[in-house]
Image (cartoon, rainbow, N blue to C red):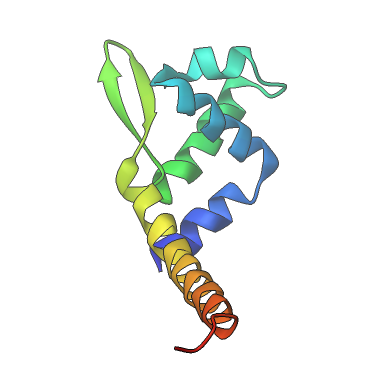
Length: 103
């Protein structure tokens, strides 16, 4: 399942940090690596894992790749999480209705 691969990719703290850099918009590997405690090749490897998990994409700009968050990959996680939210809201509604006075 797509959400499992995405969650596994985000389980690594360095990979999460790389992913969070992209929250501010598309960035090159060099720009991401400039703010990281790991090398550019390591950032590239982490981006490769995130890409295989469907969480990021890239576009070529001359000789470099500019990475961005892929909304389709996030959608898989959101769909999975939403099922828990729906169940939680249903449970909350049931608890509220228990306390309503009967007419």
